[in-house]
Length: 339
Image 1 (cartoon, rainbow, N blue to C red):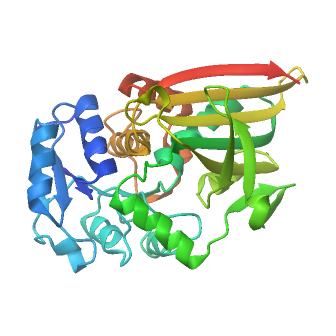
Image 2 (tube, rainbow, N blue to C red; image 1 turned 135 degrees about the horizontal axis):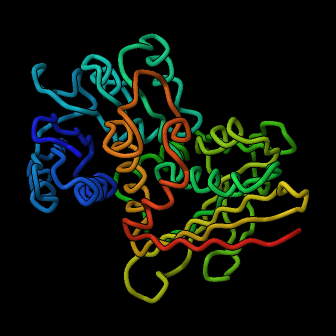
């Protein structure tokens, strides 16, 4: 339980679509947790702070400025970067203050700068790489299913969002940057790392409503997390779009997680989670950011996390994450079949 003496959690980009939802999720999980909504537009940050309620403040901050443009004496309990930290100023600030840092916006090909800072100062702060699909919720859901198997052969993650759901300016900038750099998605195929091009980057899968979708592989860190955590030889993450929101009102986000392999009795099995949230892709991502932040601070799931470089599966319990996203409002359905 947070105490009134705890310094605020600094949410950089806290007034954006993911940031505002992450702040609200943290407030639901921890009513007394101090939160600082940070952004270049203080007016917008103040508006979000009022919506979040509780001990929530607004502050001007800019990831493009040294020290984030904040007073050197300002104290925070964690630095959560929900926007691209192009100059590494967020991770530098967290290390200088010796507080947890969440790197939320790095694809698998962009993690080098944060990794280098963590290696250079390994005892300064806990740094969590969280550029995964929906804030790590996909990877943790897959690992929860994998616990039921003795051997994992393949993991396939499918994300379905509405065609007009762009996730806010920060996420849109991420998509545009990937398009401009021509970053090919990385997958594990036949036990070997492969960068997909052309039609090889597409995959058909069935969504939570039973509709076949055509997804395209994304260069997200889930693939390296899951490869390190399991013995799977096939791993990929794809995103597909639908023409209109299910039900005709508002956005709907679907996460389809499929894990196949052999059970302990030797029988083949394909296990699946359908996770559905009645909002845009930003909210399920925000759930992941909130759950990770509370864990780093020791507010749930164990004591505060010590200095080091972490992936979500290093510090988060898969079963707790699945239960937590249900508590926050996502609908979770588990199915399975023998092979």
